Amino acid sequence: MSERKVLNKYYPPDFDPSKIPKLRLPKDRQYVVRLMAPFNMRCKTCGEYIYKGKKFNARKETVQCEQYLGLPIFRFYIKCTRCLAEITFKTDPENTDYAMEHGATRNFQAEKLIEEEEKRFQKEREEEELNNPMKVLENRTKDSKMEMEVLENLQELKDLNQRQANVDFESMLERYRETEEEMRKRQEDEDEQEMRAMLAEAQKKRSLVDSDSDEEPACTKPKMTKVNPTEILSEQNFDSQKNNKGKLSNRQLISGLIVVKKQDAARSGQETRPPVIAPQVNDKRPGEVTTKGIGIKPGIEKPHQNSLPTSLALLGTYSDSESSD
Image 1 (cartoon, helix red, strand yellow):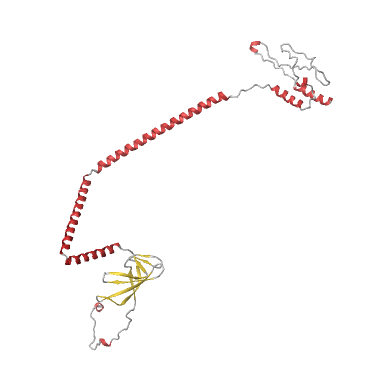
Image 2 (cartoon, rainbow, N blue to C red):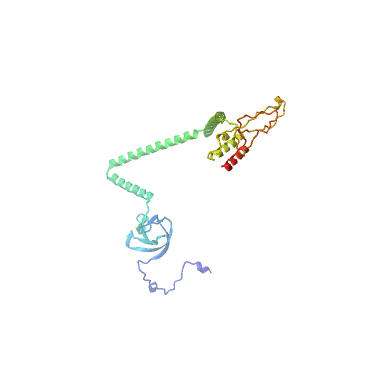
């Protein structure tokens, strides 16, 4: 069991490594490796975004006829996660980065571009200072001036921080609470005044409406006329006789009713008795009712001579006139 961890191997005395057959594999053979996307990219076929760090089962191969200082360059093949289009990128040992080759576009990276710009500017400056001593002096004065400005800005920030440190936040909060309380009380007073004004206006409108309602009955109260119930009968009888093509005489049509005055029992001291109506008709016709033999009891006023007959008498007269015709 102790031999399984031994790193040295036993070679027999007659071992000849030239006799071991060599595998003849193609130089551009591919291997399946597991890797992560080295940068953010976007597929050209479907527009899918592939973010940095996404894992793929990629195929790896060695790029032929390309080297950098004896270092080989490798190419990787991956597939889009949405449309399965093939995307290829390869290593860039010169910039210690990866270069996009086919199938996708590399997204914008501001940090990388800024670093490249700084490197380019630094290289140009070194080339200028190499053969021009006056340029070196100008660059040094610019750098010192910029450094002084940075120090001044830093001092201003420190002073501002110290001022803010001396501020009493408790007093500020207390003052803020007081102002907020005053604003709340002012708002409540304004609301209360508005409510009082609205109530006064409503009471004023109500008083105006009440006064108008009190005046209307006094002005527009209709006068009630006292209607005698016997007049309705006489009017109906008059209309019926008028429609009878004038068969009755004008004397029979003109009629009146006796209205007996009611005497107060306390004043007269006598008992009131129902009135007896005794109509009289001057013209006598067959079938008419005469009232000559009817006597009137004492204590009752005599009817007027030109008083009209009752409704029953008129009805009898109307029936007799039709039979006579």
